Amino acid sequence: MKALSNRRLLAALLTAASLTFAASAFAGPATDAVKAKQTQLFDLLGKPKSTENSTKIGAIFDEMLDYPALAEASFGPDWSKLTDPQKKEFTELLKQLVKKAYETNLHKTLAFNIEYLSETPSDNGTTVVKTKATHKTDKREPPIEIGYKVLKGGTGFKVRDIITEDVSLVEGYRSQFSKLNKDKGFAGVVEKMKEKISKGG
Image (cartoon, rainbow, N blue to C red):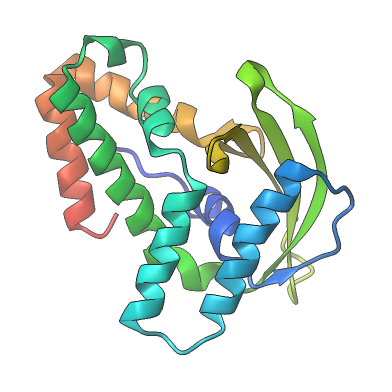
């Protein structure tokens, strides 16, 4: 499975691990929801590292990310052909992949500030919260624009996609999984995902 570039992955992970926040240029319910989760993470990451804090951070990721929606969109058009057990297995593996990536790269995101730019309606009732990440000290590092596609449900807003510099995280996964499924079938997709998880995401 082709890995996302370090820069793109780092930008995507800023949704869950930024320790410093710039003043919001726009406030709205979706923006407030995203920022609230980041504030919780700020509090946890400011404390000494512990198993308890790691568990709490993982729980916040679970609250933020809509894993079923991410799984369906990431697998692609053949999702409907999967059995319920296959859908469940794929969703759980995708969840582990995403959480592994967050846990591995948390420390890489500490040097960035986030400015909230706007929130705009998108497709299927979703809202895109647009932000800009800038390095706190290295002025040579270009800003990274990141959009979080969220949908409000019974438990609040949840992230359904992350768009980094006009590149969709879901579309990137879908391109990889669709090719694997075509070449090696569902078993091949599962094998590759487990291999990636075993290597730390």
